Image (cartoon, rainbow, N blue to C red; front, side):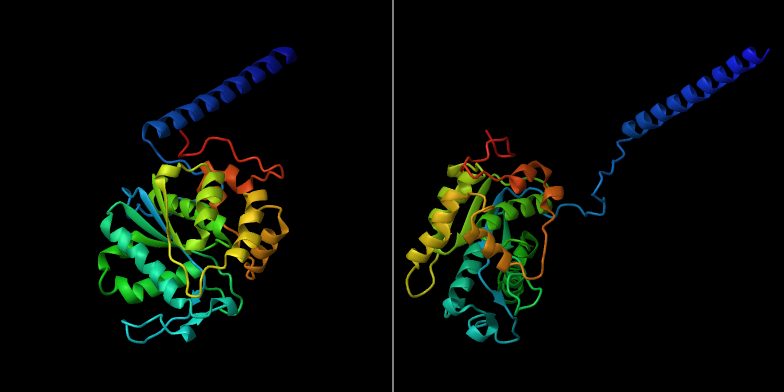
Length: 295
């Protein structure tokens, strides 16, 4: 009798377990049929609709310094050296920074598929936790978006974590994806002319972006380009370390430019690029895995 009772109890437990499993399967199938969104670990669904979902052209304005802000005349705002946190070697360069901003705006005004990304992190301890990209946007807003380029205000955003030129490019691509919901088909970078070789031949190649869809607009600061410093502090280090992950010239510079200990979120928000964020090769082997723009 005891054996029969045990057998009956085991059968009942089996039937209950099987019923629970069937109910779970039905619930999953029902949820899928209703196209209910699923939540991934590390993500939330509190994200609004893309403001410019049709954008295809990423226009990167690379940050070089931080604008303090000013209530001065709109026509001359940003032109006074005292309005900027400048390094000694950046003396009289503020006019060039304004030209970079204006060039990005001019390009976007001619291309309805363009999104401007002002890129640059919180690199200056004296300035406090204000990013280069955010300060450029603030100056653009004060000088242009509130006056002559009102329709561009939704087609301009910031990238707030880049600490060097390679990160300006890679992080801005990810910011474009966050803002638009897709990756750019075309990229235009605006910065100093003497950095063109660095961007076109090193950074672009490191991320495999097609050369024919990549453009660089260079505007140098007054006094002539510092070609020797560019070669010693950027071209040669990035040539041996394309991803800026082990060369001490590059890594120490990034550490110095991160006084507020910021960490970017892009590994989670741009999982298609996660390999690039963690890739490092001391043999100078370029990243060869598939990317959104790979052919």
